[in-house]
Length: 128
Image 1 (cartoon, rainbow, N blue to C red):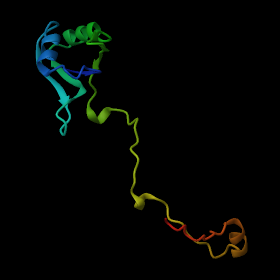
Image 2: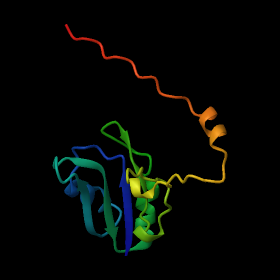
Image 3: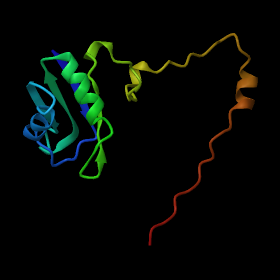
Image 4: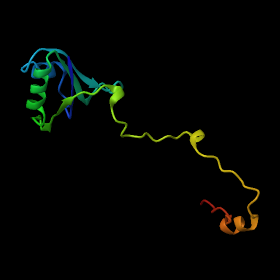
């Protein structure tokens, strides 16, 4: 069984459309378009499982780059979740992960004061 990943789908395409398209090349056991949980709209990609590997490869070669509703499909064999490369690092807003500043008592305090600029306090403007 071969799992195929289809990206850059038109947002109006359904799972039945995917199944009909890929069934031209062989038996499709599963077809699914991924939807957003909150908005219930298509996320623009989906998966198809085909029984025969040779038929799946023929479908990938035939459909990769084909334009559907003005969008060129990106069709490839889906990789398992654990073997995907970690290309994206998500930003962390966790303050616990930041390195803590430490004060070194051995350093000369006079050089520290010279390097830091003092904050100037100015009076607030009056609102009219």
